[in-house]
Image 1 (cartoon, rainbow, N blue to C red):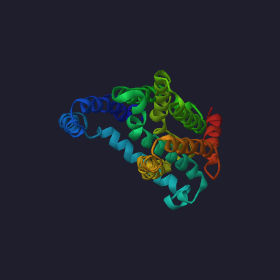
Image 2 (cartoon, rainbow, N blue to C red; image 1 turned 180 degrees about the vertical axis):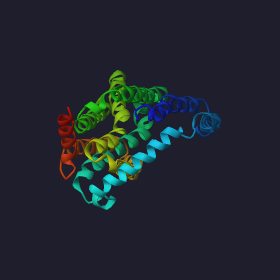
Image 3 (cartoon, helix red, strand yellow; image 1 turned 120 degrees about the vertical axis):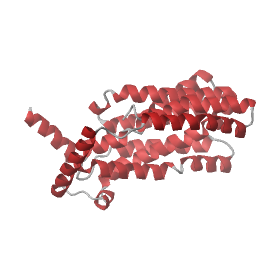
Image 4 (cartoon, rainbow, N blue to C red; image 1 turned 60 degrees about the vertical axis):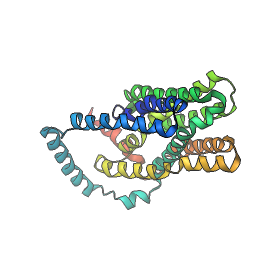
Length: 280
């Protein structure tokens, strides 16, 4: 999963700085048309050459797992409405939705926020640093993230991003801002994989597909207003001080909520560990 999600990070490493560089020499509209024109044939070629139907053995395995899931769901019924009514699901979806909304909002406004201090080229470099660390952090932590307490990890990442935003808001040195962008980028790289990992660990395997899709849908609906929130506050107050403080508050709130362990799914991970111990 960590490898599969590197595409967005690579786009941040290449596309965003390229747009900044081109828009400094051409108009933004012309720069966008050039990048879009170059991207479209690459995208189509990648789809034609690299995306294929799964092998027959893999399709058979998927069908078999679906039958097992259906049998298990009869024993442990978990429906969407029952999940939505449980506090446990919201201790996963709620804080991660807030955290990712902050991430999306900040990334959209990152160049405008850092432009007064870093200038156009420097702000583009800050985006590159953020995206590069996101890719490296996701791939690196992905090697052992399943061995960690993912709720504590999420809380640490959210708190670190709040600190990074505070440093960017208060610091007047270029190096410190780039360092804060790197810290923020590490959270961006890993936050997106945590919802599915938490669902996998804390709910029965039969419910994974349905619940992970439900959690991701909640996150997508929430993070859509992140850029609008920051932009509206920026227009209302005249600068980015209030929007960044709101982002920090949301991150801290999310870090506190994600540490709550409530509801019927609390025992799932414990039962799995107990089963593993008994099996050994």
